[in-house]
Length: 161
Image 1 (cartoon, rainbow, N blue to C red):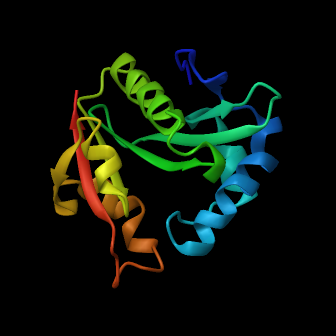
Image 2: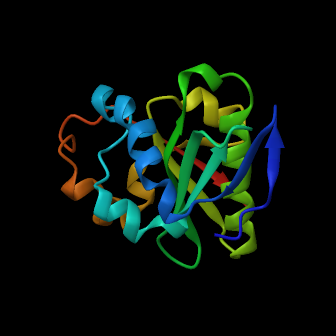
């Protein structure tokens, strides 16, 4: 990821590296437990580490993360977006999302999709409601294998770039 360096309240957003994987697992675990994030194995995190951006606090602690999953030359998804509860409301999520959408623009993508239980966050940052069926590549790649596919409560939102 060629993420742009963004800093907010002393938190720097940068591309993730393999050394960040244990911190990513710890950060995402509570959100996986509540069902807000899908589980990602250590193997998957390592294999897709270049898709991730992390927000690091001044002491180096990872306080936020998110990934940009590219499905085609026109479409990507923001996934795995998580911010440590103590840092929520401080602009960390916005900085991560701006970094990921800047990467999408740099790659020449036309749309960025998110499936979320927190649509208000995305809507205030320019995303608009969408129907999941508009994104068959996403549905084919992930939804068909999801344990919640028959009882999904996530809302699709999209940002047109």
